[in-house]
Image (cartoon, rainbow, N blue to C red; front, side, top):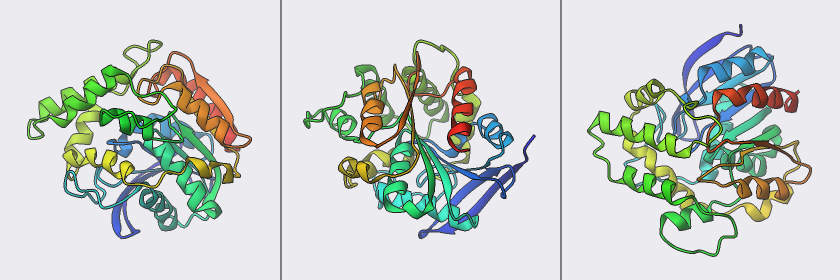
Length: 294
């Protein structure tokens, strides 16, 4: 079994970033980028371990405003998605890695796209998972506006769950944990009930965070970022788009649109899957990623 090397704090792009790695640093690197309001812990240890056992050096890290990485005050993000893409490159720099396979989930898939667009010399392949080429449909729906986005908005149930998060008493750990669990229940598809992330992972997320309320900064950070969807034809890397056909926050047409926008990309559809990577689909997803990065 590949070694879990443990956490390492690095300095890069003007902030402190908490990282973690698995496997042998001489193997090809997969950089895992997590999504909005989520720390690196949602790349579960067993998932990372299985990628590393496939002969990859796997790095996961806390994005800004999550975990042990530098945080801004709640509601005051001083960065954009482009800055977060540069953070990922800073992680590679700290580990002495010239080029890597970049894989990201949800907002992490947006960051993955921007690493490819802004830092193409650092990329071997791209794997955006349950992501989108254009976040406007989600942002407009959260604001109660019709911005003319052509992609589907989140379901009403997801929008209600997001609203409830904004009204939390963040000093009530039990309430925050219950809300986190409920949010991910709402995000699940019909194919794998109860197959999501264990509650103790969410509890650890809350307990290790510098400022857990600051995780909500990612929405405003995306909103103040320049759109990039009209640049996607510039991507010239092998790209594997992975998306669930029951995703309630970035519906399946987001994955289809991303696939269509990136020349030569491959689309892997997870049937009965929502905005999640339940363990039963790992037997399909992990071999697909290993094959894509071989």
